[in-house]
Image (cartoon, rainbow, N blue to C red; front, side, top):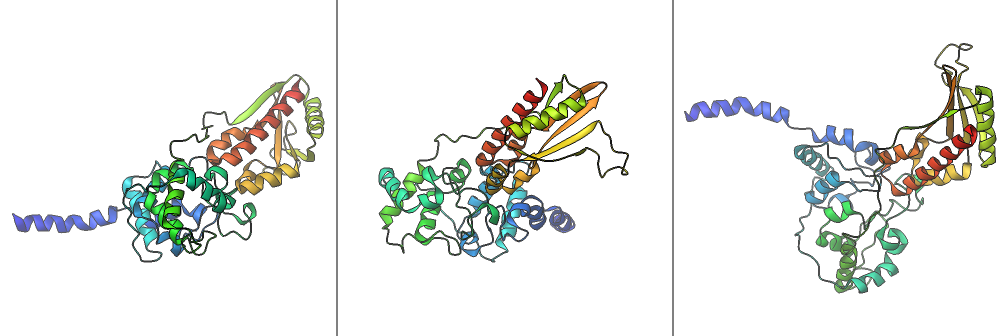
Length: 344
């Protein structure tokens, strides 16, 4: 019986190994678009930086993947199984060949009021007031060129749910070589000072964190115009100029998709832009290019004329970035006003 059991186990072993999720493939599919194919960074932080990957626990990485960073760029990956997440973490460990640190769940004792004073003195220049984090993403265009990364949001519920007190303390004590994060122990702060900072950061947990899910929004804004096609297009152009936007061009919707001269003249796109708004939005997150420059589509169908625009609030649910959501809300307001003015 024992020999039979051994034979069965030997036969099953290759099947179980082949069925195991591939961490590199999972990383490339779910993480590489932001963090780079080998974790070198991009929109997301450089994960393969030795001072980062060797200083964090497997638990921190697992929870970060699972919870994400609500209101920032990092989404939560609820679609991945626990085995998938573990495989990604194991793959990440191959970058340096070292195991992650292990931190207990013990809370650090400190004085939050004293920690706030220290935070405002030493941390606010990168992590901003209240620990809201740096502006923009890791892409060079949307962060200061002398900063290797954008400082993380310390008041973020995803971060606070993933980071143990002793992990935060360890980071403050030792810094993060290769990034602007210095060692505050080497900078002259006492261990009690650092405990006070940890306590102040931990007290962000449970506080208000304004993030709204816009997933229920309709994908387009659409109104019916009481005017003819030509009158509606002119109304749109007048409204665009009235809001200090620059008209770029008007073209058929299917231009370039059909032979020249056969384009549908009853389906037109009007492109326009406010370059100050565009630069401000791009500095927050380059993905804003999904709906900029601005465009409105005018379609005549069955004797009726419709004006349509992408709903930026629908895109807000994809961006997962509070700063960019504000730009989406502003753009939604502009589109709504333009469509209303053109169809009055």
